[in-house]
Image (tube, rainbow, N blue to C red; front, top):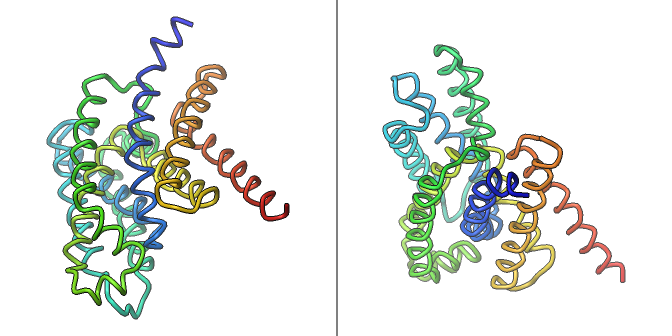
Length: 273
């Protein structure tokens, strides 16, 4: 029991922090219909990190982080600029293209670096099992600040997510609010990818939000369900990874998949009742 607490308490606390911010952002993503924006921004951050690695910066150094953040902010500006009132092409198409190009560019960059395969694996799965308390406190402070920003800007951001046509009609500067959303989102993703990897970050964003939509009706209820799903699934995944000696990040991702199936079954049973 003591060895479990020593080894797994930090990954579990990190998962709780990731749940707190990503479940909320996931609700915005679901409302906006840009499901893969997190994956795209995460891949842009990963491309920036790989480029910084090629330039000689450590993959988890401050310089490498700043390079990744700079690329993520460029991606945020791109997504904000492609939000049109009457789009000819769905924004999700642009997001998918950005993801594919960023992923391919990351592979090309790492092909020029020694041990590129190992670095690519690290970007996909992160280092959640070996996360240290200083890194946990750093992301907690960052996510808390971003949470305060979103609380202060909650009304325009929520209206743009739920009813963009009404936001345009009211004269809201939608693209500027979109840039605020995607820029803060990008800051979260850059830090999360560095710690947990692309796959786990995507799972934290989408699965709790989808479970909230399946099981609740109002925004508050969906957020509560998402947080509970994230906490319980993280706990199950961390315990399973320790008990069966499995990679922590991948185990938590699979646990989210099982949780989504359970929530889907609950929703279906209520519809059939």
